Length: 325
Image (cartoon, rainbow, N blue to C red; front, side, top):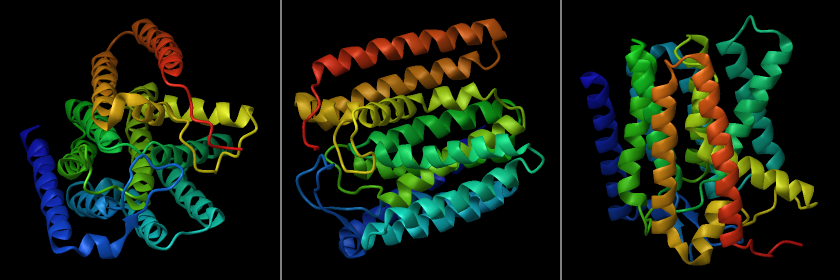
C-alpha cells in the first residue's frame, strides 16, 4: 500500500509541476484556450491543457507499473491526442463518435475476447457513455478532478486490498495525477481538463472498472456506485432533455451541477457539496464490497432512493435556465 501511495504522490507532483511550468511560461495559452460559450460557467478565457498533463503523466506511469493494462493505456493515448486536436481546432461530432466507437470496441474485445456478442455490445455502449458523460460533467471548477481523485482512489483501495497490485497502481497513478491537477483547478480554476482529459478519463473509468470485474476484484455494481454522482446527473439530464424534444448534442446548462453554480451556489460551494457526496458514495461502496449479497442490494436500493430525493430537492431549488429552443 505504501508503494502505491508513493506512486500516486509522484504523479501528483509531476502534474502540478508540469502545469505550473505551462502556466508560468505562458505556453498553456498557446496550446488550447477555452472561451466562454452557451455551456460555460466561466466568464473569461482559460487554458485547457490540464488533460494533456493528467493523462500524459498517468499513462507514462501506468506503462511502467501496470503493464497488464497496456492496451488500455495505448488507446488512452490515442484518445488524448484526438481530444487535444478537438480542444485546439474543434472536430465534427461524427469524427469524435467514430473514434470513440473504435476505441470502445477494441477495449471491449481486448478485455473480454470470449464474451458473447450481446455482452460486447453492452460494454461498447457503456464505455462510450462513460467517455461522454465525463465530458458532459466537466464544467465546474474542481468537479471532474474531484471525481477522478475519489473515484479512481476507490478503485485503487479495493484492488490493493485484493492483492491486485497493477490495477491498484493504475488507479493510484490516475488519482494522483488528478490531485496535482486540482491544485490548479480549484475555484477559481486557472486551467481546465479539456476533451483531452475528460474523454480519456471516462474511458479509463469504464475500462479499469471492467478489468477489475473480470478479475473478480469487485462486483459490477461497485464502480457504477463509485462514479454514480456523474452517472446519475448526466443520465437523468440527457433523458429529460430527450423527452422534452431537445437536441442532446447542443450546448446547455441543464445539469444539476450547472444549475447549482448559476443559482447563487457558485463553484466553491457546489464543488464542496459534490465532494461530500463522492466521499459518502465511495466510502460506502468500499465498505460494502465484502458484505453479504442481501446487504449489498439493500445499499444500492438505499442509494437509489437517496438519489431520487436529492435530485428532486435540488431540482426545486435550482430552476433550469431556458436557453434552448
